Image (cartoon, rainbow, N blue to C red; front, side, top):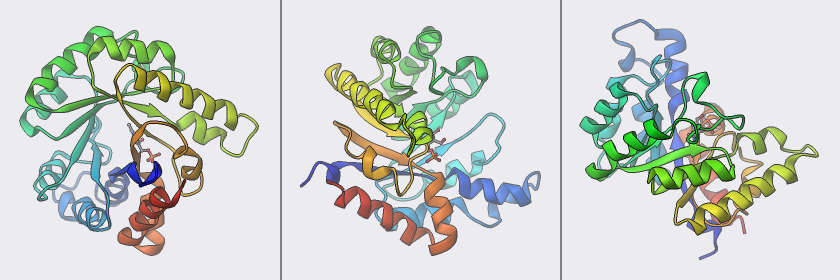
Length: 252
Ligand code: PXP
């Protein structure tokens, strides 16, 4: 098995809900309206997705609580819930007990320049959230920029997983800055692996730049959303996910 074949694909289906809410926001029946994030999740899993990622935002701009409960019922699903470090979300995750939780920033003051969670400055809150969820068997990951200090703070916070924010790399893609951003991600992967983290990555990955992203060392899982939902509009969810799976399998 090549290194790339070992990289798992988490499909982020938030934007199936974004499209639904664009028409049905405020309608109490909206979770039964089209397009259905639940149906999208099932198609993605049937096409080879290793897990489904959803972000229950405080503003409920896409995924609704009812979506989360419905998707969590899919047999054998590996559900990754993205959430902010708030008391409300901690309680929700404690009830849901998904396989994984990824802690993400939602408000401006929680965000670093790379766009990830500012674990250095939010350390106490992040650590308390990890401690509230990990004992329930939930695998907690921290969505952070490829930054040495953030990785060290994440280690001290006791999370077993980091998800490295690939947004700056994606933004720089095909520009003169791309190799620098790739190098930052590469050394972050090395550092995180050396500290014992499981290393995931995500944000802004598409069918083109993924061929470079998979060259990163020690990658466990990529979480990919927008590009797959966008491609699904053209070819259907099953094919959109299969195509991405094939890119992960065939990239060397
Ligand atoms: N990982 C995390 C933590 C995210 O919040 C998101 C959504 O912004 C993604 C991955 C997927 O990003 P994209 O939709 O750009 O593929």
